[in-house]
Structure formats: structure tokens, C-alpha cells
Image 1 (cartoon, rainbow, N blue to C red):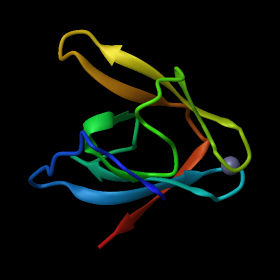
Image 2 (tube, rainbow, N blue to C red):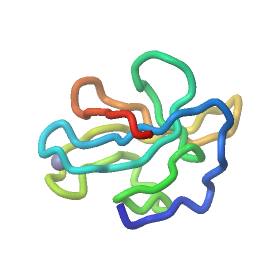
Image 3 (cartoon, rainbow, N blue to C red):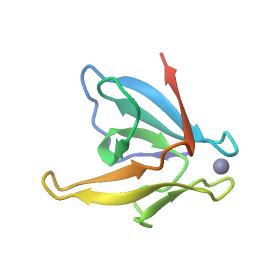
Length: 97
Ligand SMILES: [Zn+2]
């Protein structure tokens, strides 16, 4: 993970997940997850570090290692925030302490 996220804000009560590619196991992002349950969306401002350049909006999230599609990027109109909508069963997550 080489890119630091300039939009990153520390969030209270969150925990850290590493999201990796489900195809090749490559680590994609370090993410602050809020609340229980599966990862459905990744808010851009909760990403701590990534292997992809977040400043470029490609509309999709592709694994930089194997090129598989893992998520699509969209804007939440209500909050005016960009998120990645994760595609089910294309990625793995693990908790970090
Ligand atoms: Zn991959």
C-alpha cells in the first residue's frame, strides 16, 4: 500500500480492516470500518492507505495486481461523498489491531 489518502479523517469507534483481492490475495486498502456487519461500501474518506490512486476517479476499483473488478465508485448524493460499492465475494477482509 503506497498511497496515503489525503481525505482521510480519523473516526472514533472504528476498527481497522485490511481489504484484499479475493482472486490473488493482494492487499488493496486499509480501511476504518464503523459498525458491525459485512463491508458493503467503502467511504473514500475512511480509507487510510491504499494500493490504488484514490485521486483518480476511474469509476471502478480494479485490483492493481490481477486487474479483477472489485467495486464500482459512486457518489452518495445526500452526503455528497464518494464511496466504493463493493462487489460481493470478490474481496476478503481481515481485522487489524
Ligand atoms: Zn487481485
